[in-house]
Image (cartoon, rainbow, N blue to C red; front, side, top):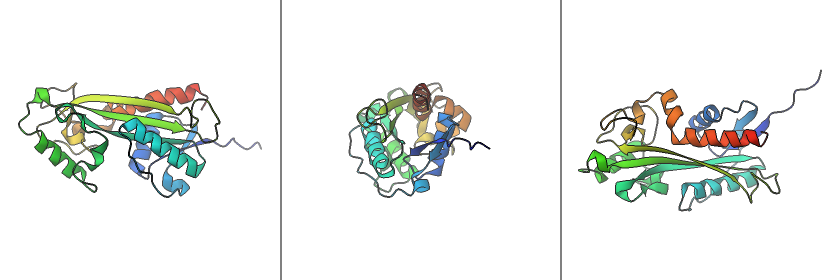
Length: 215
């Protein structure tokens, strides 16, 4: 009996089972085995000190690809609020402190925007996905030519948190397709979110490129 060919493996630079599962759904690449950092027992983490989401994703992809010798996908994403000059930006996860919870970050954001009307609370989620294959000397996916895809999800910051679905700033983020005071992402189903989110748009674009390259 002929042995079935081994599936190509792609390391996802995360230890979060939630993020791994979400990317598995969004990428929809059944021929590729997606692995987490814990699956391959890669330790350590890089200093994410770039001034953009794409820059931080590139730092992570290079770091973990070098340590695993596997094709690696890294992401970085966050929230940009126009009334805060684009903040919290790359400090999205650490907005209220290095170990702040989602609830603490949301509470700080609402305090910072207190008194600002709905029309001036415009914001967006931004996601950057980067793939690097350390086995490639050149071409798309190599260290010198990483594959980078981004997605943007436009909306506004709600006047108060609503909903318990999702994570991060989802309970205070209203998509622009909703009227002011309408549903937040925290009130959307997973299926609704996965049709419009920043990570979904970036993942769809990345999956198209990987398929084009023969993955």
